Structures are given as C-alpha cells and as structure tokens.
Image 1 (tube, rainbow, N blue to C red):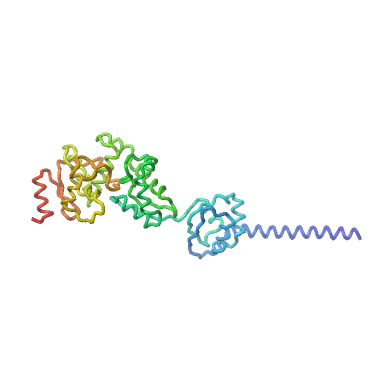
Image 2 (image 1 turned 90 degrees about the horizontal axis):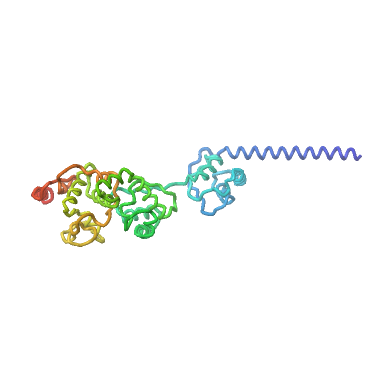
Length: 339
C-alpha cells in the first residue's frame, strides 16, 4: 500500500512539474510573442504623454488602457528585464499600436518625443520673437523678454551685450513641449555662437570691430534690405560713412528706439534722441536692432567695394545708390517724391 502511495505521489509530482513547465513555456511564449508583435498593424499614430515622475507601472497601464499594447503586465516585465524602469523620459510621444512593445520601449528610452516647430525669420526683433514663442505654446512673452534683458542670465550665456537683441539666431527650431524659456534662449544663442565662426571673429578684428559691433551693423543691414543681393552694397555705404565719421542716418534705428511705433515714420521721429537714433548719434547704435541672418553678418564683414555714401528706396525692394549728396537728392525726388 505504501509503495502504491509513493508511486502515485511521484506520478503526481511529475505531472505537476510537467504542468508547471508547460504553463511556464506557454507564459514565456506569450511573453516573447508579445514583445515582437504589434497589437494592431493597421493602427494610426496617437499622442501619448509620460508625465514627469510617472512610474513604470502607471505608464504600462496607460499604454494598455489606450489600446497601444495588449498587456501592461508583460510590458512592465520587459522594461524591468531591460533595466529601463527608471529611464523612461517624460514628454509627448507619437505612438501606434502598429509598433511592437519592443519598439515602443526603444522610443521611450531614446527620448524620441514629439517636437514643435518655431520659425524665427531674419530681421525679427526680441518682441516679435517673444510673441512667436508664446504663440507656439511655450512660455510667456513677457517672461521671455525679461530673461533677454537680465544681466546675470546674459552673462551666464557668455554674451557681451546689454540684451540678447541680435543674438537669437534666426532659423527653424524644434523643441519638445514644456521646454523652458531658458533652454529655448540658450539653444538660439548657442546657434549664434556656432554660426559666428573663428574666421568671422578674425575678420572682425581685421576690420577693427568687436563681435557686438558687427552684429549691430549686420542687424541694420538686415533691416534695410528687401533684396538679398544688395546686402554687401548697403553694408559698403555704412562702412564708408563710418570711415568718414558721418552719421549713418538709417530709419530702422530710429524706429527701434520708438515705443509703440505705428508704422509711419515722421520727421519729428528723426529728432528724438535715443541710443539707437543714428540721425542724432555718430557711429553705431548701442546694440543690434534685430536678429541678423548669416548673409547679413557676412555682408557686414565683407562689404562690397564702392564709393557710395547714400541710398534711397526705389519702392520695389531695391535701392538707388549715390556717391554725392546732390545725386542722392535727385534720387529722392525721382523715387520718393515722383518728380
């Protein structure tokens, strides 16, 4: 009797081990199938957010509840096997049930967050840039402007200026949602530093200008040009006037110094004394009046060879250039007064 009981016990144990082994094999088969199989191969992308501080369990449950994966339990196990539990980066992701769970985890680990585009055109000033930053859903325009005039913050960026006017390089940028004002500004100023190459710094020194003075001059060239090919010629006029100790007398510098300018420059505006009004001050203004692009910077560094001292708009985005005051007055009568 005891022998029979022992026999049955052994058989039961073997059967139990077989069942457990089978269940284990089935579990691991389902697990590995889960890792490499998308939930729905025809699914579209959707926005999925990982919040700062959100843990792996909550993320896994959210993925399942949004029908991106089939099992939060398997995803959590897979992430732990990959030692990724604490490496999932907060942000917005474009995910689809057509991604395998392995691909989804890879997207999280590499931080492939959704990026939002910000376009900063050449010739925009700080106020225009700040409004675009706010309209793009990032930070408050007034706070952005405050940072751009904060002496300590400017110093931390290694920019030698009273403001960041001219140093937020115009280009198309891509940022994740919730990027701070500070990080946006640092990205733009870093882009400026990379664009203003050592060769350009050396050229500025050859001309006897500081980087700040070249950026200031380039910003004026940028605001005066409607046709890109004229930049070096317009730059030559300003270089020639500076050499002759003549005032630059450029309208964009007057406009920059006027609060709430309505778009209509008047004779009385030219008489307002500001650190930017080049009708009243000699030399360059105290700082840039806009963000110059690379072509304007190059024009400031490499002006065309000319004897021109004046130019006037022909009202078709181009200008008439003159060597003498008499020629200039004649051009003004022809192109501005229609005489």
